[in-house]
Length: 464
Image 1 (tube, rainbow, N blue to C red):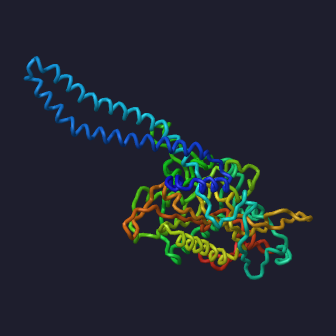
Image 2 (cartoon, rainbow, N blue to C red; image 1 turned 90 degrees about the vertical axis):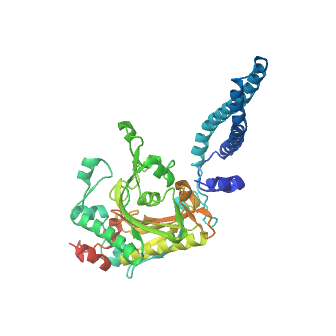
Image 3 (cartoon, rainbow, N blue to C red; image 1 turned 60 degrees about the vertical axis):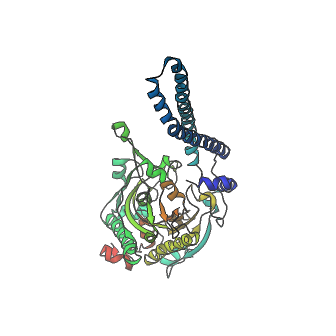
């Protein structure tokens, strides 16, 4: 949620931000509702203050008159009763006015709040403008020794690469058919070396963040209330991507949703809390199962392990002071953690600066990390894939957008209560990451070499 005070002061910043993100928002209606809401609240405050004043002033007078009426002479009773009626009518009239204003507020406020939730976080000033992923800008590339993504796989390894689907089927690492039989399209079963590799990758990434980078290990729910999805900015815009558990239809007082990332649970921990300054920055890491409907992605990466409905992810989250420089520093560090991991796993990758049109609702800045996948991309004249990058990580800065929605605050050095800043980044998501690993490390004899850093977790130097 945006800062409504900042929106009133600089509405054009938010208009431009939504336009740059290619997100339609009815700002004129929002401003109108905000003005109407503020008028009602001002009048309500005035009426309630008047009600309290009258209660203090007229209450004793009403009590005194009622006492005097019991022994009043007939000739004075009429005047006293008239005076009492006047005194009693004022609070009644104000009470009726308050009731009408509350009805007005109940009419305006839901629409105002719903519309406010649709306003995206404006992009940071230095984020390049663009309409979508096609306008993202490459920042840098890294290749392991002895491999160059500008040259064909065959020219460097002496054989044509096979795609991950062929590899995992041959080695019985994944059973797609039985997964689909059980749960429908984009489901799978990891078997044998597939499950072992999946667990080894997750554990390596998790241990690396805890033991080498000092993050606190946390296990969080992956089934959450709607408030948590709204608070982290995944609703209302991403509602169609979430799996919905209709608990209210079974008598519960709320529905539940399956989360698409551990970020939701990690950020929800401190909702509605005021943290002491010395507790910041919070550095949390979790590994959780994630669920995504992938609505609207039909026909795009639907085969294999790239775009699936259920996966596991090691996710890092940082909550820091409301300081832009500190947030940017953490962003670089979080990306750096992933770069070290990628280099240890000997996977070529590139960093992409996401443009405004590819940031999503909640991010003010985002850098994608894409892994090189030899079996991806267009096929050459001989039908051999030429290889391509595929997104495996996203590192985001959200300023105070999530923390404001979650009401996650801290007390600064001056004792002022402020909304914190939040960041998140994938450390490793599997089984998607199995794709670049098996494709990059496939050998001419059909085996898969295991990178040195992963061997202690898999207890093997290759998959035969």
